[in-house]
Amino acid sequence: MTPSKHLSLLPVMAALLLVLACTGTPIRFGGRLPNFDPDRVDFSRGREISASASGFQLLCIIPIAVNSRHETAYRELLKKAGGDYLTNIRIEEAWTYGLVGTIFTTTITSTAFPHRTD
Image (cartoon, rainbow, N blue to C red):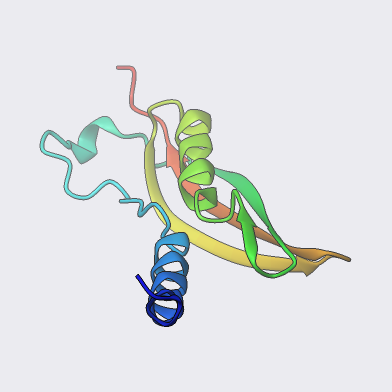
């Protein structure tokens, strides 16, 4: 391959790397529960729970745990719920500028209702 052909591949490779580097993990919130019985949930004892996860983008180019922060926060929220019924899920995004990059924080808040024991 001649040097000019190598140079013509450079923009294509750079675009490909850019597209591949910007993918995150999608999360799904519950959906329809097949055996959900609202009579088994104690809607009088709801509590607010929340979970956060952060990532850092070094020099506004290099992502460090940025793309997985939604999934990490949601897994932490499910741990805090302990199997309780989750509803009213809210997602909040925040960012803070640092000297050499930006911190991105995702906070997921929900109302958790326990199951009836009777």
